Image (tube, rainbow, N blue to C red):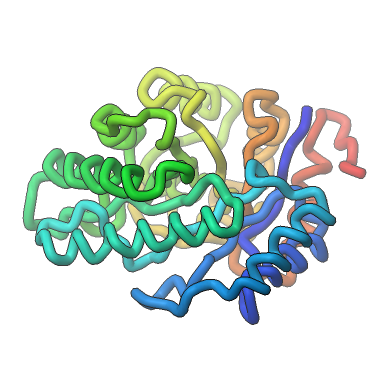
Length: 288
């Protein structure tokens, strides 16, 4: 097995610092924000920082398949109002272009919300239309749709909804999905037992397709299963518990895709990564 476990690393001070921060915690994969995730606009990436990012990736052995950036939380590709949906679309395209500049081939994004103003099915179609338009503008970056907890009016909390979006994307080679463990649990997927995990993955395969699974976000949950509330917790300290993460780590189908921690305290990430690698086989063999 070859697991690529890492964390969503800070790019404060420049995108190149995300690579340095990943190396410090012995991550074999990492995520980052290519711009401030809570602002619509940002100045262009500086050429020297792009060069440093690429050089450090080469030096530390990270290629594009190990990196899963996260798009801004402000983006709502299914917004019911055209002007606001277009603002989100333009923000997504900008971030895809930033990924292209950095040599990154994937960008993770939350699908969106209908805000209680349109039907969920219409919102899903608007998201698919947005993805189609974004891919037309930046065809070298794959849009990775993350499942949601279903909080508020957000869509994408079921694998069926993710599949409905993907089915309407014209270029299937440029769209995929990421499973967030906390979101899945909060949305009602009970994957806390071996059979429950197998059932969840079977359902994903039958709806979205395992070939479309391009990454995971590994998070425990502060809130109960089915609560529809998105609150991440440290692995083993939430209501999912430590043991179920072993199902993912020991599943050979999850080899060679980014498994990214988004747990609350970055000071613990090196220990969480080591703990997850220790689950790699039944004997607790540690990653070297």
